[in-house]
Amino acid sequence: MLIVGPPGAGKGTQAAKLASDFGIPAIATGDIFRHNIRTGTELGTQVKAIVDAGDYVPDSLTNELVASRLAEEDALEGFLLDGYPRTLNQVAYLTDLLAARGQSLDGVIQLVADTDEVVSRLRKRAVEQGRMDDSEEAIRHRQDVFARETAPLVAAYRDKGLLVEVDGIGEIDEVEGRITAALAAHGIQRPGAVTTV
Image (tube, rainbow, N blue to C red):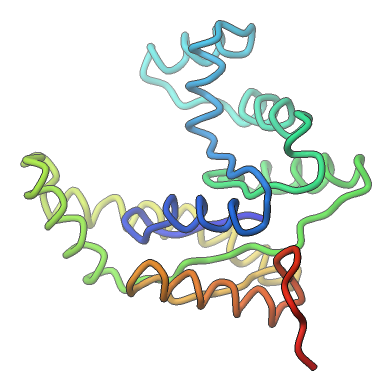
């Protein structure tokens, strides 16, 4: 599965809960990058040089890192990706990678959140943490960039019938319940979940 949602929608929190519920790893691309840099892998050395130069990690290298992570034993029976794919090229790569393993995505969870609500939430957090550079303008800009960049991906997965849209605003447990119900309606059950007829 994949999870997508704007900054501040609680994606990381829900990804961790879903991973625990389904017994699969939550895999964030940022974590993959940091792990490879920290452990000094060949791919990590390449990523570090690119990041240190202030450039974006290209699709080809990101794809290699994700493929390497998905080949690890804990991800062979399932996973929840967060932050990947980010481009249509990455969507195509992931589809082909999984097909080569005889697998496919079961669902793409989209946390939908009202921009004003998310901006208010992030602004409050910034003030509480003393991050004064996190202005409302900066937060709104990140929301706009996210919406623009992910629109093609969301459309592609909607066309494939994989998109599971969930209201991401509310208490953590409330949102988790909505996600679980939406996945069940999409035919995706937690292991050990009782199916009611």
